Length: 187
Image 1 (cartoon, rainbow, N blue to C red):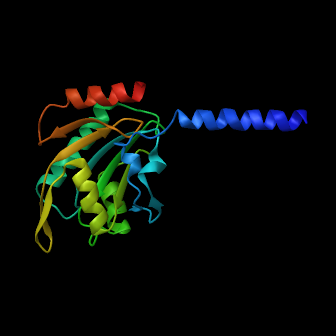
Image 2 (cartoon, one colour; image 1 turned 135 degrees about the horizontal axis):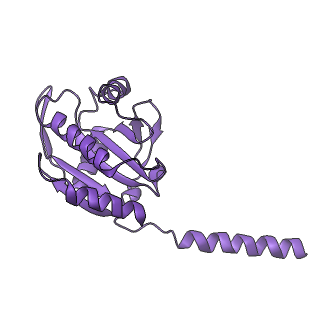
Image 3 (cartoon, one colour; image 1 turned 180 degrees about the vertical axis):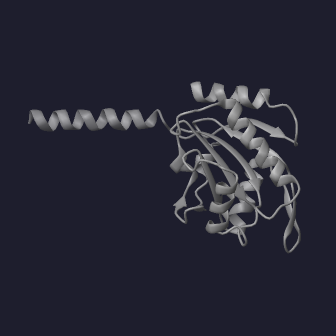
C-alpha cells in the first residue's frame, strides 16, 4: 500500500511539473506540421522545445538575397559565440521545397560550413511553408520557375517558442539581435 501511495504521489508531482511547462498560444511549438530535414528525417517545431531558435526563410538556388541572408546568419552565429547545441538551433527554412531536396539542403549546409549540431535546414509542403511564412511575417512569391521574391527576415524565438526579436533587411547592425539571442539563452 505504501508503494502505491508513493507511486501516485510521484505521478501527481510529474503531472504538476508538466502543467508549468504549458505552451503559450503564440508559441511556434504549436505549429503541428512535419518538416523534412537535410538528413531526410522528419522534425516538428515541438521537437526543438527548450532551445532558442534563430530562423530565416531562403531557397538554395537564389543568387541575390539568400547568400547575403545566409552570411548574416553566419555572422550572427559567430558573434553569439560557441553555445551548447542543447540551447540553440539555427534553422534555414526552404521556400522552394520542390527543388530544395534533402541532398541539396545537406550540400548547402556543407558548402557553408554549418555544423549540423547547431544548424538545421528544413522543407515542408507548399501549404505548410505558406502557413509558417504567414506566422513569421515573411512574404514570398514565385516569380519564375526558379526565382522567388521574398522578405529578408531573421527571427529569434525564445526557449518557450515565442517571438523574441525580428531583424528585417540585409547588411544592418547585428548588435541588437546578438544581444537578444544571448539574453534568451540565459533565460
